[in-house]
Image 1 (spheres, helix red, strand yellow):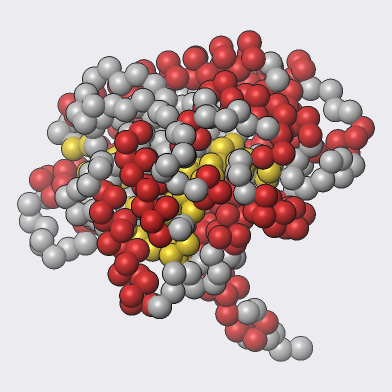
Image 2 (spheres, rainbow, N blue to C red):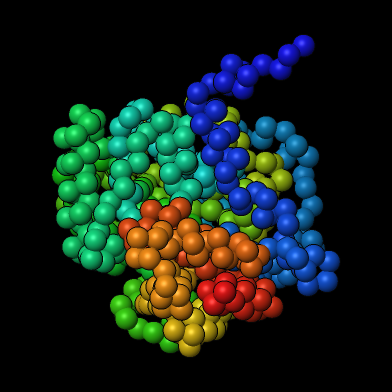
Length: 436
């Protein structure tokens, strides 16, 4: 029997995703990771936002504590997470996010990762075609998370020479909102923040969050604060401009007189602060919107967390002595590795975005350095693609600024939350790629 044409057996949306997946190198890279002894020809991966610095400590804890009760082999308390887990998460986040009003278990919905949580808020707040504001540069996977299944429209916000996390950025959000609504006839329904910021590695100042809340109130749109890096905040010991800002959760701001509290929501998860992407556990926090919670109950089946992840996460977060020690050690390691990486690129004349104090990222201008080393290049040549091809040739993977909506070509994100030997090998290959 003749094989059917793909266009006849897939929907248009599935075919679009199939085409995009075929062009995505990341899955090939993850299956061919460098190891000096077993796979010396593999890729050195400093492009995926994972934190492997504390795996030994976390595994030691898990492997001595985990004993799974039988109820976690059942549907337990439903698709939004067990009562025990939601209580553990709320108590843990009360200690660390300092919400104005303490979190309660019924104000949380647990999902199988924060990507599912992002998809849920997009689905719940915006109809197909309606807009969600997202400042540039942004975490690249926000785009499919917000739009692929919910079919909302991501509205990128351009800042030009304005600090994306500064007070003047608020005007840019409003401009993007008005232009989208006037040009499409569709409404903007939400504003998405990554706080702390991926890929810039900084925290939004409290006064800027307040002004963004006022903007959301003015247009009656939701503020979604993705705080997945909330506890991965550390001391910057080598560069102080712009001055590093301490992390303050959107939930720690009293909405009275600023914004309808039904419009304020936060996200968190185990992937980054606990270096546990594979646990696949995220949290949606909404303290004042019962209709939103009722809607999430209706779709929680599609993001049901594993019973093992549910039990394991509760076990970890209930142990405050362990989590306090873990967080402090992790923050110290992140601080040290940021200093090492930033010093390395600075000593080799590579521009980077300074003033970081959060997450795992150094935002570097490899395109500028490449042009300096290769003056024969035409100014019209797309420098980001040229550098990316050089990096892959040298078997090192970084995330390109093009995937993050960077307003300027040539910027890349280095993930420095790596064991020292991997980071050293990656930086050596990056330098070789630029010099080649």
